[in-house]
Image (cartoon, rainbow, N blue to C red; front, side):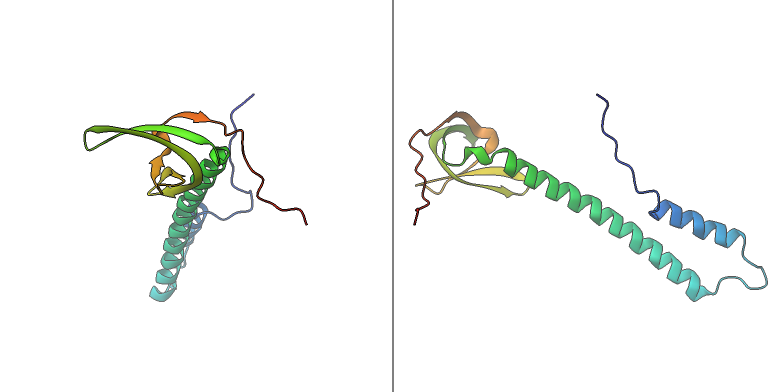
Length: 141
């Protein structure tokens, strides 16, 4: 099985293609009627905007992909008991609790525990126990 590759659509005009068109246009312009300053500035502005939008799109795709993937990958922790251990200010702290929610803060996935409203990094979890007495909170009417 080969590695997946991503390709841009064949009909998409990316920043490289836009820049090639601009350079070709400048090389082949009529010396008696060169591009007006306003046209050139407009084209450079379009290029700059295209580049910034492309960069923003990449960043947002990575951010959203990481967050949703991490949350969905660990959603099965909800309702389970976790045992955690982490070093805080040079001292080892540990504890346990039932997972009530998952959240992301500053790119770090956190497990929110019931009763003590504590948030623990997912990397601090040492053990996970399945709670057999899960109650279905939906009422049949």
